[in-house]
Image (cartoon, rainbow, N blue to C red; front, side, top):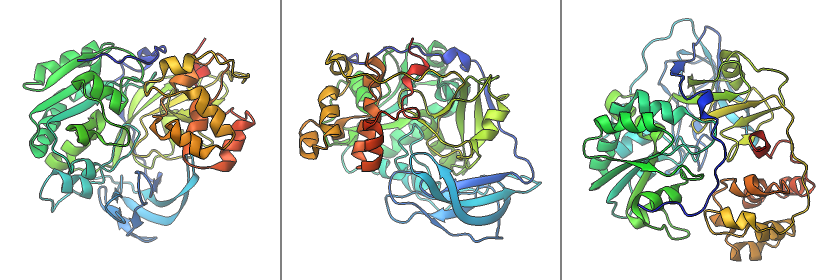
Length: 440
């Protein structure tokens, strides 16, 4: 096993919610759920329900619009109140199916009619739940031979503990999931990679692992990056522009693997997920929330915030984004909410060319040069300096003594959002720079 040779060591703050068991969020009569149609990378799915239609928990409400898409299911028993718009991160808003919950909540409608795990994942609407939201049925049908299945239990992002709790509370089912995937793929090796700062999870998994290797990995960010995890567990390097299958590897997040198992064994489509609600909330916790739940309900469930709201980060402070609305609904790739009640925005200063960002970049890029080229809109040169290899981990943001919003600029530049890039260029970063939350 090779250690990750670059990265940073931000404070974890996982003690806030790490010992809190997963708690289901209650569903009440009249609660509304907003199911965005683009909860995956690829083409948005297409609604198959109409206003006034009764739906049961688990019923399909939108179908994939091509291979690179994912189905969507009702998270509750209730009535479709419309197909409209909802608040959504990055895009501002998104098309959505809106459902009002009924007074009675029953068992879910099961996924049926599949022949293997890949088709089950397609019918169950399963996507990557670590944040990438890559449709899982595509991963489960690789074009190249795969000999190793890796489950990503690193959870290196500060504050987040949803995967940690899943590894502790559902260790036996996770092992079952790994074996199912391993058998389906025809792999000869299965690995669960967990950072060394999670000894309770490592111990729980090793009790039930059998032939599955549970590897204790160095605690360094971004250990959970897909390419970094593959290097740490196999010593293999994924070539630029290639997928893990090109080096014989399939990687799934802990939550994704369990969702695949739940669909295949129990017939449960992806209708809820665990979200860590932490930061400046009264009761940091890990919540099992139905998809489509407005995040304000999760904040209220955690006792509200301790002070005046300044910022809400979706995900962790390294890779997450600060959002504009508490009405944004829970989506498949949301793993955390970090509430901030202190005004710690750092003042952006000119780059001093210290080179620290180069020293910590896990992809061996030159963030200082990428920023210079991005601000000057040198698109051809950005390609030469491998902008698309940036994994948006935020290590450069964290280490920068001048508080340059590097990750945010690179993310926006990759989307070719000229207006957004201009905002960053003007140092309007109150809602884009998250690292001051935990950096002294």
